[in-house]
Each structure stands twice: as structure tokens, then as C-alpha cells.
Amino acid sequence: MGEAPAFLFDDLQNGYENELDLVCSGKETTIVVGKTKYVIGGYDDSALSLGVKVFDNSIGKWVYPKVLGTKPTVSSDHWALPLCEDRILVIKNGSTAGDSIWFLEVDTPIVRQQSKVLGSKVVAWSKGVKGYAGKPIIISGPSGVGKGTLIAKLMKEFPSMFGFSVSHTTRAPRVKETDGVHYHFTNHSVMEQEIKDGKFLEFASVHGNLYGTSIEAVEVVADAGKRCILDIDVQGARSVRASSLDAIFIFICPPSFEELEKRLRSRGSETEEQIQKRLRNAKGELDQARLPGLFDHILVNDDLETCYKSLKNLLGLHDFADNTYESVPKKFGLPLVHSVSKVGSEIYINSGAADLQNAKNSFVLDVSSRKGGAPGRTRGLDLYPICPFGGFADRIEDLS
Ligand SMILES: Nc1nc2c(ncn2[C@@H]2O[C@H](COP(=O)(O)OP(=O)(O)O)[C@@H](O)[C@H]2O)c(=O)[nH]1
Ligand SMILES: Nc1ncnc2c1ncn2[C@@H]1O[C@H](COP(=O)(O)OP(=O)(O)O)[C@@H](O)[C@H]1O
Image (spheres, rainbow, N blue to C red):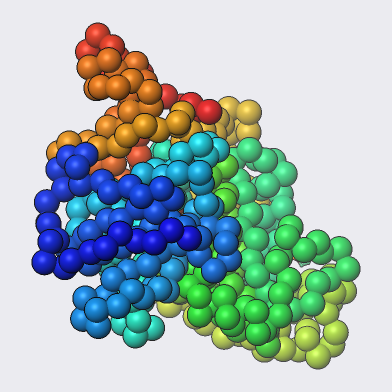
């Protein structure tokens, strides 16, 4: 790991309007935001991803902050520059499409909130992605009501439109379940550590086991241009309601308790003790589902085909064939980057030409419509090649 350049706090500047504000030193970039200095690069302790260290003015020492979100892998080189006072834009060189543009959040609401909770310096990575994702769909309901059956039907009929959020759980796999497909099967100590590391959008203890939706589970579905379906319990639905994820909340009800019990037994995947526990919990779940403001729609799953039709109707899918749905590519790729500069609110990326006039290898990265952020994805970015004769060429879908 290279040494950070010598540094005097009195020398800190606050305005960053041009290329001079970028300080590159081999594999490390040094960026000043407000009164704090960040060094991005080198390697973190896993030696696989970009490291971050911060000069803490109050103690006059370098500190390694707690880093939230999926970290960018190490690249041969990268560029970094501050965007506003709360985040740093990082552009990786020679990386694959979908892995070029990153944001390191240093003073956003989530970073401030996590700093308070953890009592230490926190930063958070977010990957830059084109376009927006469709609203995720939350499906909740008591065990045995038919959530899995309905979701499987939807995914089978509309394979290119929907993707399933693969949860983590500490419960044992059932005979026909596959790790990484139905669930990520894990154990208590690993999952508890990952919860502390901020990896989960929500988690809950259900029927005696831990279940949780990782941020990554939702984001990979959106990255593939699909709408994410989450099968989570009522507590999880409440946590997602309180989060920044804008979703549609659907609760599936059984026609009767007797029928629910019959379905649970006919599935044959639980012991008698587990069935009793699930039936006891079902009463509480049905009560909570009726509370105002949690679920947008409640569907009774009596006849399966009728319920499935209602589900498709409320998702606006009645006359929809899967082949009429086009998923939009959402990945960025960039040729080798020679320089990056910020002029006003625009980021100029120069990939070969020595100056901006001779601009056939130059691009503008538009971050003005960005949405979302750490930990996860910053969506809604756009990338335009600059035409040599003035104006912008059409937006580029994928440069790789
Ligand atoms: N909060 C939360 N609940 C989950 C998650 N994944 C599954 N669940 C819920 O956990 C409960 C038990 O799921 P499972 O063990 O697969 O049993 P099943 O519902 O009987 O098929 C169900 O209510 C699921 O909706 C998750 O990631 N978060
Ligand atoms: N409308 C329905 N009528 C009768 N049986 C159903 C219906 N919906 C689902 N089932 C059956 O009930 C059992 C439980 O369904 P499942 O989808 O596993 O529930 P969940 O995912 O909510 O726990 C399965 O054997 C399934 O085939």
C-alpha cells in the first residue's frame, strides 16, 4: 500500500471546481471534503477491494472507518473527486461494465445515522447505475397460505419481468430447496455479524429462526432490469415500510384457519411441533395485516387460479405477455480514463483526447437525476459522448 502524501490541515480548501482538485498518487487518491481528508485506494484488509482511510483532525491521526455497502474491487487505477459536501465520485479504470462508477458517501443521512449508532467514523459505498428500477413487490402472509405457489406462477409466466429476492435464513433447507436459489442458508453467528455490518435491508426472527433480506439480494434483481419480489413476514414488511425502499405491499389471506392448517399439513415439510408454531403465529400475522397503513392490498387465496388472476390484475398484468416486456440494460462501461474533471454540475471524462475540444473520446456523466444511494445503488445516472462538432451524441447504452 502506498503512503498518503504529507498533509497540513491548514492547507485545506473547500471549493472543487476544476481538475486541479483531483490529487492522484498511483493507486491511492486523496480527497478533501469539508475539513476531512479521505484516502481512497490501496487495499483494504481483504486485499480485494478499494480501501478507505480518513484523517481525523480531532485526534490528529489516520483512522480506518467502518465501511458499509458492497465495496468496489481493486482496479489498476481510479479517479476520485468530491460531489457536493456529502459524497465522493470514484471512477475505476479498466473495469468491466457495471463496475466503473461508484460513490463513497461520507456525510449522507445514512452515514450520519450509522455513525451515531456505532459511535465511530462511517463511510458507505454505492454503485452507480443507469436508469431506474421498477417498484419491488412485497408478498406476506401466514405460512402455508400459498405465497410461494403464487410467486412461482408469476415467475414462470413472466420470467424476464420478475426476479426473486433470495433471503438469508438460519432455518435448515427443505428437501427440494437449493442454497442460493430458495434461500442463502446460513447460521446464527454469521448472520448476526452480517446484520451488525449493515448488510441487511430488513431482518426478523420468524418461527424461531432468523430471516433477512440483504441489500444486495434486492439490488442484483434490479441490476438485471427486473422487478424484485420479496417473500417476507409481516415484521419484515413493517421494516421495509419504514425504510427508503418504495415498494408495493400485498398480504395473502387464507379462506379459513381450517384450510390453512390443511395446506400446511399437505405440504408435508414441517414437523407437528413446527406446524403448531406456524398456526399460532398465523393468528398474530392476520391481526397485524389488518392494521391501517401497512399493506396496500389484501388478497384471499381460496381458489388458486382466481387469486393468481387478482394478483396479476393489481400488478397491471392482465393483458401482458412476457415477450412484450423489455428489460433495459443498466450497466456502465468506460474505455480507459485519462482525466476526470468537474465543471459546475457536470463531470467530464476524457478517455484519450488531450483536450476537451478534440472530444471524440470524451464523455459527460450526468449525476443530476441521481436517486437512491448507499448502501446499494445510485440510480438514474446518464453518460453522453461529446460530439466533435458540438452538441451531444445519443446516450450510450453500454460502452464495453
Ligand atoms: N422478515 C423476513 N421474513 C422472511 C424472509 N424470508 C422469508 N421470510 C418469511 O419467513 C416465514 C417462514 O418462511 P419459510 O421458512 O420459507 O416457511 P413458509 O412460509 O412456510 O414457506 C414466511 O412468513 C416468510 O415470508 C426475509 O428475508 N425476511
Ligand atoms: N389456493 C390454493 N388451494 C389449495 N392449495 C393451495 C393453494 N395455494 C397453495 N396451495 C398449496 O398449499 C401448500 C402451501 O403453499 P406454499 O406456497 O408453500 O405456502 P407459503 O409459501 O405461503 O408457505 C402447498 O402444498 C400448495 O400447493
